[in-house]
Image 1 (cartoon, rainbow, N blue to C red):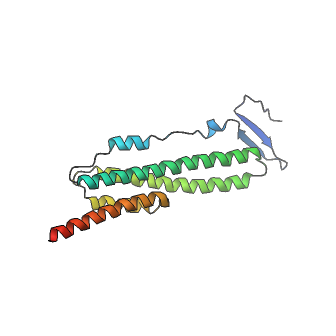
Image 2: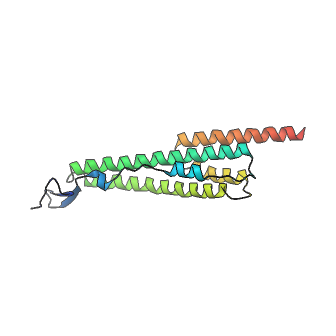
Image 3: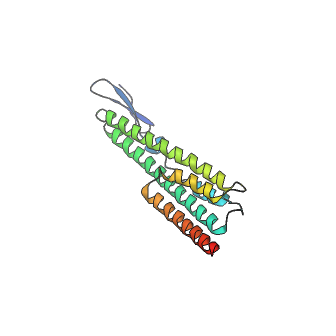
Length: 177
């Protein structure tokens, strides 16, 4: 018979089918909540070269910040979902193991997509800081990144792109006169 004392980090549950499940007593130690510092860090480090016009550089910085906020929100949401799934499993490990495994698979797939977005964001930040970079190169990579984003984040970035396109069209019209 397992020893389940309140001060122990885990408890063991023996199910009617004879299977044993080790449950963490303190979910905080198993799934800690952490505050992301990515937004502040990248905002302070992001220096777009002077070859990009000031307005376009500002719009790109805002778009990058929007993407970072979306990624941070999605990451926080995944952490909370994982904690909630584990809490539900821990309350009934004998009856919810299959459900918990399915939840973990879904969370794992979403975490993988989020990691891909973070990698693309890193590439975008690196590209944005490359001397001689063209705004079109950054917008192209930003578009690839936005394809996998939530609709709310994508709409903010799309508005920024439309503003830039309107400004470019206006400059071309004025230049042809």
